[in-house]
Image (cartoon, rainbow, N blue to C red):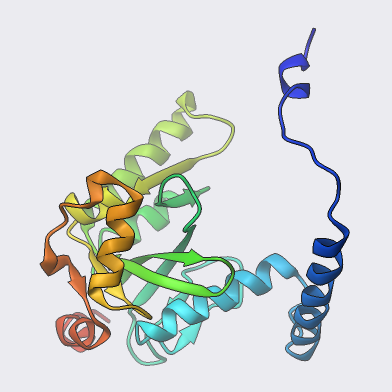
Length: 222
């Protein structure tokens, strides 16, 4: 019978009225902020807020309020952009997922103007760290995947994922420790996966070390 497997999936339990009431109270407070800043679409509101938080810690001054384009820009003068991907601490694995990527966007990742940040969050507001960097081979990887999809060998939509370990080991990304010490972040990674226990200490940067390493003004290409 069609769909019988799907009907057997899921774990159902009685609705917790305490959770419902307390959660609704939180959402009412969120609604007040949405109305104040005219951010009626909740998904867009959360995405823009998280992009703003990650971008702000990394020194980006501007956030994109539209659907298309990159998420943050360094400032009005310099053409340095940031693509923010978010992952939940509770997920089984952490990775940067690209949905409906275009060949134009893949091409941008080959250049010096676009950086990628994988922000890992615990619960709604605790930003643990950002895996951050830039590598032209990410653009080539995305280009290959998108081309393959356009040729008809893809799935329902063009989706590509680059795991945290791959970003660090294959593409030379750094772990930017935002609200926690480098030791605390290393412990988080070690507890998450045995494969992440052996990441070099030099990959972990405090915010001050991050600012020293990434001198954007020398990277700008107008």
